[in-house]
Amino acid sequence: MKIAIVNDMPMAVEALRRALAFEPAHQMVWVARNGAEAVQLCAEKTPDLILMDLIMPVMDGVEATRRIMAETPCAIVIVTVDRQQNVHRVFEAMGHGALDVVDTPALGAGDAREAAAPLLRKILNIGWLIGDKAPRSRPAPTPPRSSGSRQRLVAIGSSAGGPAALEVLLKGLPRDFSAAIVLVQHVDQVFAAGMAEWLASASGLDVRLAREGEPPQAGAVLLAGTNHHIRLLKNGTLAYTAEPVNEIYRPSIDVFFESVASYWNGDAVGVLLTGMGRDGAQGLKLMRQQGYLTIAQDQQSSAVYGMPKAAAAIDAAVEIRPLEKIAPRLLEIFPK
Image (cartoon, rainbow, N blue to C red):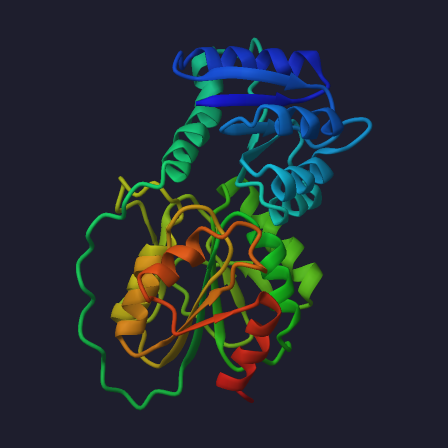
């Protein structure tokens, strides 16, 4: 993979160089010392992946991400030395299309290969994403349940550009929205709690991490909070599971949507938002086949038109809507 580094700290650049050296197939194509230089270099020689710092002179990583994704889009991973202090910047950059975030590998701290492993794992995953691997075949869900239940659920999946899209969608819903909401966003578990807090502050809704064994319930927005997949069980509660272990997307939107199609005992809507790759498309189709309304974000309002495009291509979405029209539609479906 052709990889570029954007960082003004020589020690951080060296740490990234050493980490990449453990995988000889990776080629470092250029290094930029600030966001403005990165925008220019990306236009001249677009890499497969950019490792983007957040705090830099001239132009920071948030604005550089926005410019690159608008002008010469490519995969971007935010690399930071202080995720807690920079949590709002992280999600702002992800809102502009950054795919993921990871800590800067530590130089001289124990086993160098072990320190590099989280970054190399992210790069491997992104290689699969931008390689657009075909989806694996999946078992069909169980037949729909016959029930007079009035339970209501909105199942939402998002990836690149998702934090900003989720902010817009959730701001359009009232605190007393009558349906439970479960979110599956591709984000590492170390950032999940910060994302829940950020979305709660931005939207005014009760957004928190989903807990093992709790049921979705109206008035709470539950965010998948680990690197394991989240599933709905037959008894109506949520559970985290490592299976399927070979699923490249973690947590997987497909895994959650499929569990909703199999086990939700009530009314539901599936919503697939901006993101790279195709995670969620097959699960959304299974929800549609079970008679649930399914919505995909349209191309114009998507930061990265990958997952919604994959859903549209297999006719998984009953409706394709601009982001700002999704919350009003949910209020029509699930009025007070």
